[in-house]
Length: 347
Image (cartoon, rainbow, N blue to C red; front, side):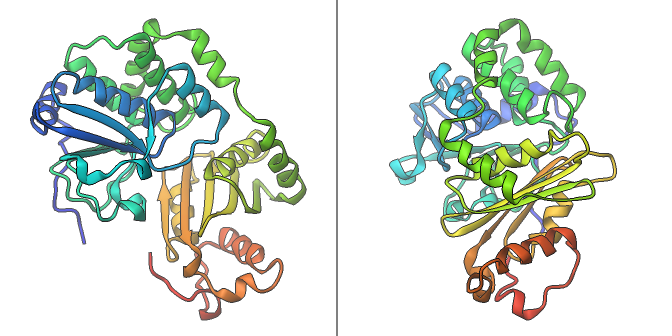
């Protein structure tokens, strides 16, 4: 069913967008900002919090994920970001809820929440938030939030500017991935305000000792076929580990497609990376796994998240069966699924 709530028109000015955003809040509001914590999402949440300073009663930023990536941990620590896990708060204690750099349909755990504000740069999905600013052609949500700050005539602090700068930098992969002139303008606006030493330290905090075992396992299990590297790691501690592995294999000079897959709690996660004008990671992920769960993303990067209950139990009974099934799906994403391969085709 198509979304009936219109997003802000691209033709609207920064000031018009800002006024509509500000109208969504009042000075008695208790605001909960929900993110899946990565650099772009963290920076965007900080920007919204700054926009709401002295305009609402309180703002709390909550993450839905466990942060394990060393660079993300370094960002949170060095920029003194105050984040709590969503499990530590009660959404009913807040009368306004916003989600940034994501949308409610991206995570099943958010299905029962009523969102007032959605700001994102991923493809539009079904949601009924009264205020939406969804701009999938932007390289980063941090760019959108920088535009709001500029419209409000707010010069971001060094820490906020650094966060936004790094969010744009990572989500555009230094503008190798999809980006617009707006991303570059925001980048140039923020550059004189950032702490370059902090950016350097965050970027150099790539690995922890505990992550080394996954590199060893990934190198032992990786399958390389033509220009594609793929690996199934079994159970891993976090989706961030899979992101790290997918990005790692993209550093091999003749690899243009990378997929890292693993099981996190009761979900199968697959992280896709591609480079090339004729390749589309979002379409690849959707065709491979969309019939089993949530799958999609951008041309250069995408993700699939599948409840294990949506897969055939027989895949878990014989050693190697699940890995072979996953390999077939990514190599032949449009291939019809036989009944023995799936109990459910629910997405």
